[in-house]
Length: 74
Image (cartoon, rainbow, N blue to C red; front, side, top):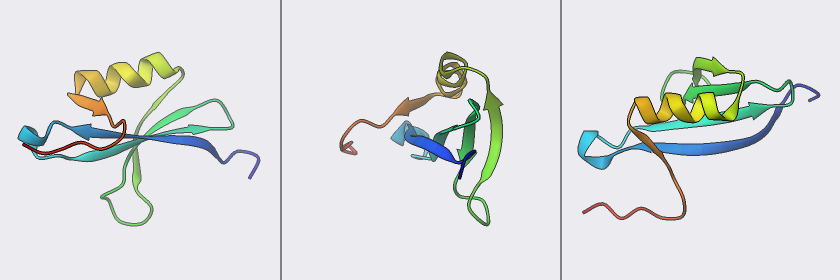
């Protein structure tokens, strides 16, 4: 697993938009992968980024927020 994932973060589209879940996976190779886990198999990589800031910008532009703890749906 020399090139495997080192960590994963969960991002959630705002509940008013449908509460879609996406993942950010950081691989040992130094690449950040944005993953749609709802696709068949283990999910589909929809974008790759060279830096964490680039990946965060992708999520911000797509109106996703990092999940921290528990979100209550109002």
